[in-house]
Image (cartoon, rainbow, N blue to C red):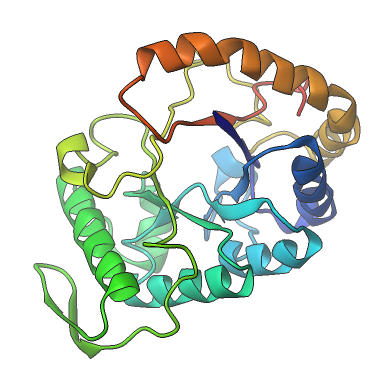
Length: 265
């Protein structure tokens, strides 16, 4: 059982706190530290001022030695899959194999309309699955010729390859059947099962969803160190029951996302 710490946002006003959280997450024993990958946060995610997630992760990585870094999640439909494959591969090489690629089909219509186009759920899912197929081929093959319904590549070469063999782990995220790729479609790619936030609707703290004031976020991280050991103990207590329900999943990962200001890191 390995644990993943997912930060609530990628806002610039949280950057000093994100740096501290990444370093302390490694010290505590988390397997990976993930950042959301939004170009625009909107009202539900603390506003439209955001940092580029993959550039931010490349800054965080040298501050640590063992913890992995990735996205929760990157929208393949907003980032061209060939370019995304190159970005993640480069970070994997520079960190000696410490990247995780979180993949999602997207749910914010405003963000899509601002940076791309808004498609029906099934089309976004089809684009996501096809994009992942292209990414994996670029990561694992020498010269790639690819002609799909949405993406194409002719004599594409991606070097250097990612350090991890056969490739960086993939993590698929979604909030429901319409927003997540069909499990049958992604089973052959799946390295890490994505766990939905199981809190009842209407009971989620604003900060857990990326909201909350800057003062609340600072208070959260300031007190986070004190509650980290207790949080990890709670997670380990859940391990037995979680594993009993997922015995067939050999690479189980569990997220820890703060549900409220009282439920600390």
